[in-house]
Figure (cartoon, rainbow over the protein chains, first blue to last red):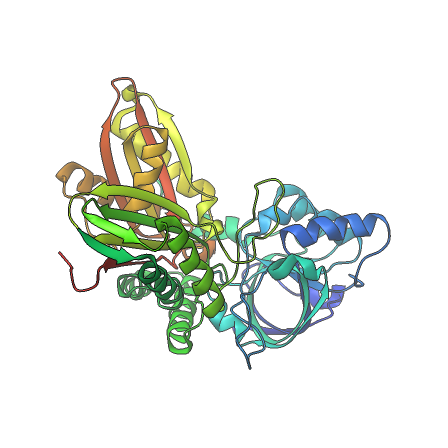
Length: 186
Length: 286
């Protein structure tokens, strides 16, 4: 298997251009968590020009962590299923969002939007939240604290293991993977 | 009449909440190790290796294996000759969930109302299914169920003429449509028969069986084997990146039904299949 590609945030089009569906990546730098309720609010804030942080070049991690034990940076943290954010994603990509981390396939509209805005969708491995927590070096709540686990958190991560799912060429690892390993009688 | 204090129930529920979320069952670990040997996809093997590493970190650090520590589902088997004192059974269970999710640093993932959606802040209320049985003991089985897999579950009221092939098709289609969403490799719980709600309930109970123990009926045992093969031919693979190991097991439970009905329910569990049981009073295991 090919070695993992090192990527750091914020992302620019040049960083993303070389990434292809199926590439393993280790990501370092600042990323932001946001899931269902935070997305609803972010899209509303984008409409009135009052986003709580500048989305340009940023990466959003669809995640709501477990509480941190005393002395730990974070509790267990891992990706939630991405399709629930599909309705909100094109607006955020228009605001300059460059990367998303989640799990599961995106809608046709989101995939097209990723291609158009030269962004990237990564998958993290669902259910490996104890492992991922070890890659998080700093956590700070930056918006919507009233949402508890769903608040927007600014994370500093080091070598977060990811896999490229949707790239700027419109490839989709989920479709390609199934085609390659399918043995169904048609 | 034998009595059991509500406090004792709360204490055991607290312990179980923490225990099941931090320690993935040995049957699941064995099944994932076996899947790692059979998987042909390099990314798939990498994923399975990371899952095993994660599960051992979680057990070592007594920390949640998955951030989605779920909604708690409790299956109660209450002996009719046992009396619970010092509070109600459901209050005792919910208090145990409240304490377990606080002390265990587990995520609170329950909202008060499906449309209002304010977090209750303590992961209560639990979903409680109670069965009154003979005897003088209380058996509690707790399941921590994440939404990623629960959301991919389905129930369909088939026609008796659809028969075994119709049932199999619905199950395989449900898993195919779920794709990467429920965090494969998954466990597939199937309920056939009963009514719309009882088929769903036995599908969920099917997830509680130790992995790859077969249905006692030969016909359904053969269906379980056949379905596992068909599902692993879908090509979804670990985390949906493509591969052979889409499901670790298929468990079927059945019940009698109306002459006009053939209900089928599919309840999917992610690879972090978390459940555990206790029988009270302790030391009175049947």
